Image (cartoon, rainbow over all chains, first blue to last red; front, side):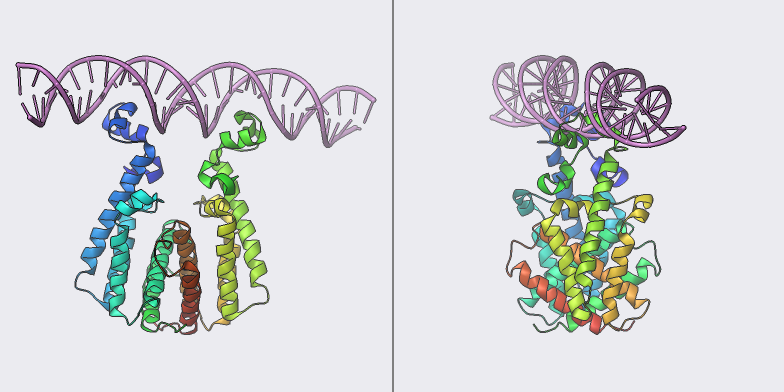
Amino acid sequence: MADEVGFDKVTVAALARHFGVKDASLYSHLKNSQDLKTRIALLALSELADRVAAALAGRAGKDALEAFANAYRDYAREHPGRYAAAQLRLDPEAAAASAGARHAGMTRAILRGYDLTEPDQTHAVRLLGSVFHGYISLESGGSFSHSAPGTEETWARVLDALDALLRNWPAP
Amino acid sequence: MADEVGFDKVTVAALARHFGVKDASLYSHLKNSQDLKTRIALLALSELADRVAAALAGRAGKDALEAFANAYRDYAREHPGRYAAAQLRLDPEAAAASAGARHAGMTRAILRGYDLTEPDQTHAVRLLGSVFHGYISLESGGSFSHSAPGTEETWARVLDALDALLRNWPAP
DNA sequence: GCATTTACCTAAAAGCATTAGGCAAATCAC
DNA sequence: GTGATTTGCCTAATGCTTTTAGGTAAATGC
């Protein structure tokens, strides 16, 4: 439903309509409407982690970087509603139960192909997360669609640039 | 109100309570609730552009890069509700009337201090936008707060890294 | 075969969005 | 200045979404 009608349109009432039951009936399954949203977010985070893990298997260096980045971007394009859910700010309890740690771990795994030590590794993990999250968010919001060149080309060149940066990370 | 109670809590009803008038009265001033949200977004985008313009004046190179990035980040911290509003997906009409073009122009202005020509300039503009948007979004969502080192240090090193990257942008 | 759990239901309250129609004060035009 | 218009607000009403409380019938567990 999230992918079809948009994550923000997934309400308890809409879900009840979808299943042909009464709104109130769903409260045996859900704590409240926030709970519904959180569950979608956790599902998306978990699916996304699975995809990334599969994409990353057997790859290293720039190959891994591209596979990782494309796994995120492809998931966002194929499942826009679920990806939007994955951006939801989770409360600490939900965050702890989420696949967040897997994501962080896999981002760090990319860096094994590059010559970075702590704390630069953490800085780089955060930079990569920022770029991917930011790029996909801006692209899906249409920010890049009103000017040449195409976003496909930019995406490739951004990955080139990140690869170059990781291979040549500046000293403090 | 957005900064105090959160952008998503700024409803027509809440605004009416705030002013001590009836909900319906506000519909003389607003088209609908989406219009209210759009107006907040346009305000935020415009204020942010003013700040960035002021921060950028008389600076070039890494100095400009840092001023630009900090203007965004500081605004997001000082006015979280307004910054959230600025992320709203605007319909084409509102987008055209927004300060979006000023933002794009100023991002491009940063690159004057670096040796980039089209189409790399556009790629770099998009990368910078992605990093800043992504970083601020993740940081404000608490994604960086559960591990060392501190986000202040990462922010400084990310700006170092972007500066290095722009000075040494890889050929296709 | 009885007790419990599951998966629904009805009823009802409360909040938000929105439209229609109306009134009084402020402002404008001549 | 006075009549016309605009402005800013109101009441009333509708329809949606969320959520709680209390109840029933079928499925499941021991």
